[in-house]
Amino acid sequence: MPNVFGSPHKGSEPRHEQVVFCQDEASGLRAIIAIYSTALGPALGGTRFYPYGSEEEALTDVLNLSRGMAYKNALAGLDHGGGKAVIIGDPTTDKSEALLRAYGRFVESLNGRYYTACDVGTFSEDMDLVARECGYVTGRTVAHGGAGDSSILTSYGVFQGMRAAAEATWGSPTLRGRRVGVEGVGKVGHRLVDLLREDGAEVVICDVSEAAVARVKARHPEVEIVADNAALVRSPLDVYAPCALGGSLDDETVPVLSAKIVCGAANNQLAHPGIEKQLADRGVLYAPDYVVNSGGVIQVADEIGGFSFDRAKTRASGILDTTRRIFALAAEEGVPPAVAADRMAEQRMSEVGRLRGIWLGGH
Ligand SMILES: NC(=O)c1ccc[n+]([C@@H]2O[C@H](COP(=O)([O-])OP(=O)(O)OC[C@H]3O[C@@H](n4cnc5c(N)ncnc54)[C@H](O)[C@@H]3O)[C@@H](O)[C@H]2O)c1
Image (cartoon, rainbow, N blue to C red):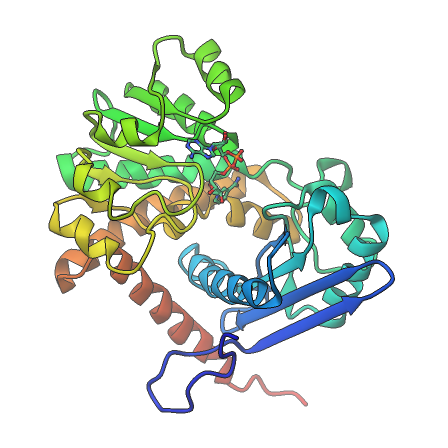
């Protein structure tokens, strides 16, 4: 079992503030909510509904995901800590109104320490049901005052991160005339292709879904298609944009990659620790995934206070400058950008989180 409490030794890695196991036998709900940190405010992160093979697998996932959200939210400039939840089960067969509402009551019982939203296996309609029992829900449908599809701002943010990487590599924040390979043209990837074509980039794509490829082909007949990701990473590219699942950058892909930049939407792109160093050693600039794909969480965070698309888009535009600052810090400290991003996030959690220690008076 993962060690939730961690090592008591000073200097060891910080551990999660709170981990809650929730069970409602009648509806079949088995969920774990993990709050990594509330240093910057209430924890925010989605609910993953997934048929985990064991409790241990679910716990490991929620611990990793909630930690990742703390870093993502910190660098997105949000007043939110990091949290995440997992529901154990098959969303296609186990999801019911009673189960989602039971889950909502457990989220409510945390009294605002954790805000939930959609993730793999959950949708805005599910959040509408959770919200019938709970006030700490975002990512709802437009009909219920929600902000709708988060992939619009996610793709926009990835594009801003890519502009920063182009500037650091070629001197100007544009992809004009560059050849960009997009792995996965789903909700985020196909919108990224639109932005790249608008900017004058040449685009090559791959996707396991024929329907996804056909949608891009219909809008952009000039886009090149390759069979799979193995062919994509081997083709001549200036930029590689993983927008499918995690783990695209591994011991096989990194050595054959021709691109000078990696920047995409997928979470957890680096298959294991050490890949960031392999990329840096090959002269490939990696724009950290959790920084450039934060447009979606920026959107759902904005929804909590009453959604304004323009306000959320302005904040997502900030991903350009945040990515620039990460590259500058990486160069200054002689570390890969992934390490620089973690340091910047930790600094914000510590500097801004500390302010709660200032006594405000009153009772
Ligand atoms: N949607 C968001 O707002 C958001 C926010 C942050 C991060 N992300 C991450 O971005 C990635 C894409 O998200 P999405 O919302 O577009 O998901 P999606 O499911 O709509 O799209 C993923 C696409 O990748 C394709 N794909 C799957 N396996 C593949 C493979 N082996 N090779 C090529 N293509 C493959 C799928 O067919 C699909 O078209 C995910 O990793 C997601 O976690 C999404």
